[in-house]
Amino acid sequence: MEPTPLFVPAAEGPRIELPALGITMRVLVPAAATGGQLAMIEETTGPGTGPPLHVHHQQTETFHFLDGTYELAVGERRFRATPGSSAVVPAGVPHTFRNLGSAPARLVFILSPAGEGEAFFHALAVLTASGGKPEPAALAALAARFGTELVGPPLGG
Image (cartoon, helix red, strand yellow):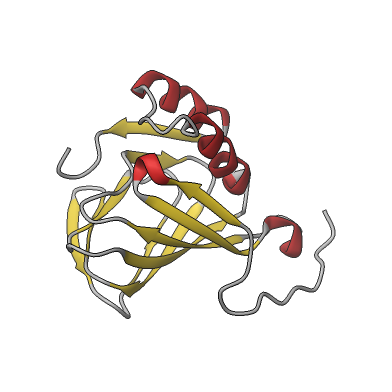
């Protein structure tokens, strides 16, 4: 995959809507723009929501927290992430987060290498299009198809 120049103006970029999970994503840098080296996605996380505890076996995930307050679990450690905080989660380390506030919060994450991270989120949007939360087994199978292992529940869940 050959990298291609890209500029994404503010508030633009492909959106991935996951309303059943309380999440909206905006693809800032698609994998194709970097030859698969990374993908960068902005996430708006609804109050009290976040992903299940999971592991990326082939990707490092880097977070930068923009708005709101998040609880971040990385391995056995817990952090309170406020605007301006950043975190790096190496491949193979279980992690999750949740929005602690009563309003939507925002973060940016980078998957490196990009792998099929964007494709996973698009497939997840299809899985949740009916409006309900996906069955845990269906979600785990989908994640596994894209190189992610679900290893526990979301924080607070």
